[in-house]
Length: 181
Image 1 (cartoon, rainbow, N blue to C red):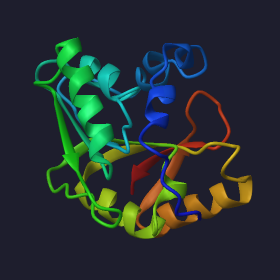
Image 2: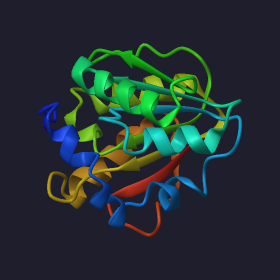
Image 3: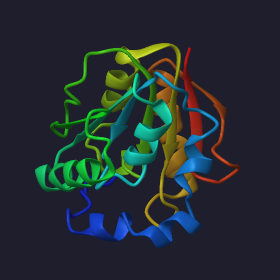
């Protein structure tokens, strides 16, 4: 897997409202998120999925957004404040090899980032350690960065850490719903 990190300024492109036509967060997340859940959003960028997730989990829920780039988190915090969601979102700086999350989570969002981490197996191990029983990971990887063979390798690494494939997200390739086994 590559270890290139998406530059912080690309976050502006990823948070573009036009992206909703291709990846509508309500459609992607809606079948999985419920009121009161705790969500871990890894590599949230400027909050394309984070803000809708915070709306979906409601006032009793929480979204923990972790990123290795403080500039991404600063933008996410500004957008959360503007949307009135800052009480539901905790933005944390993490490191490339440590999520710095210990609290139990119901669901993890891992959109377009596993190919950027130095050790996917270690990432899945950390996620698995905080997932509640039957907790899920929503995983996607971009087709233009990750081949089908590389995606299958990613799924094998997840499986080796006690995560099983239970479906895909909206029938799209290079996506998976993983569940704690």
